[in-house]
Image (cartoon, rainbow over all chains, first blue to last red; front, top):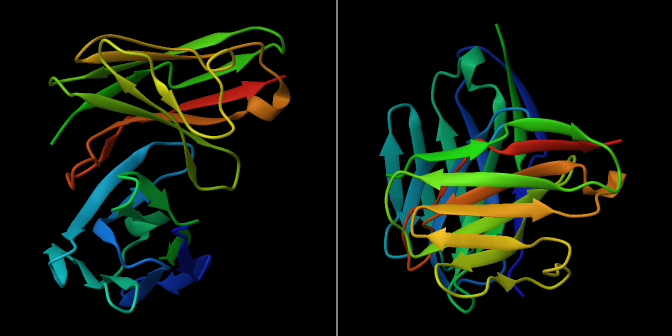
Length: 112
Length: 114
């Protein structure tokens, strides 16, 4: 059974720092991995999608990497800003079920 | 990308009543997905809704409690029936994410049952 784990559960950093969020999954049989942002009480905003054949994707200050063989992904946020404060979720699309499996999320606070 | 409008954005309901959540997509899609996010938890898939057929429910979710309609390729509703405080959650609809495509979510419905 596919399981997705995100570490740390919470993170607080001063504005301007570069930071890395981690996501690990137990079964390498995935179609893709997606990173989302969720503001309190709101829906999910898609940040980056990495297909299983890809190693990384970039969008602005965000860079996501994927190492399928080791079951790991990282989300790198450069020059963090208070507006980046949110919960970040990763999800894998499992090959055997065709369904998204979510991690528990990392709640990020960027202090001015 | 897909733009998803979900209504209501939040509601406070009395126990024993029902609430219907609407989800409208700006393009035609084959499958729509309904998720539940309990307080402090991650997302759990409730069911997959295909147009013209019965929804497919995940383990632990039943049609009597969460009836779903899918009248056309751009719209779906989820009803939370006979609500109890344990149903207090954020409910989200989603499209994409199948066949390796990008998943998109509505803004969620924050339900509180008192």
